[in-house]
Structure formats: structure tokens, C-alpha cells
Length: 91
Figure (cartoon, helix red, strand yellow):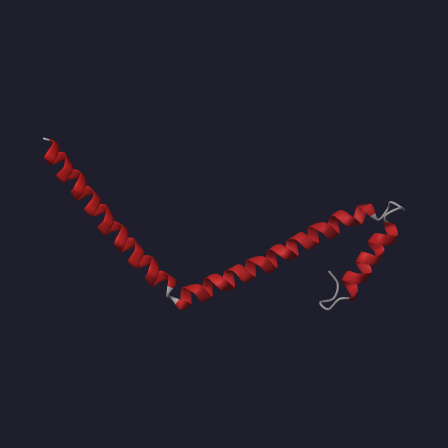
């Protein structure tokens, strides 16, 4: 009885190792695909640009009401002038 269980466990381990080897081969093929790597890189770059644009827009919108406070007005005006002066034009 115990020997049969060892054979069943051994066969299950062999099957799992075969499955693991097949998955490893598929992963290697995917990693070597330059088209997929190029697409993923372009998507990551585009996502970064869009994300940064959204964050800057939100910060500018938050700063607008704060300009009414006399203490913060000079600093916020300098920040606004710097953003307008940089290449890329107005925000």
C-alpha cells in the first residue's frame, strides 16, 4: 500500500516538473520577443507621460485658490511664472 502511494506521489511530482518546464520554455520565448518588449516599453512611456500630466494639472488646480492667501501669493506667482517660462508653453 505504501509503495503504491510513493509511486502516485512520484508520478505527480514528475507531472508537475514537466508542467513547470513547459511554462519556463513559454516564458523564455515571451522574453525573447522584441516586438512584445517594444510594445510594453511604449505603453509604459505613454502611461508615465499621461500620469505626470494629470499630476501637474491637479497641483495647478489646487494652487489656484491658495493664491488668494497673501502669505503664499509671492511663492505661487514665482512657481506659475517658472511653469510659463519653460519650454512647452502654458500649462
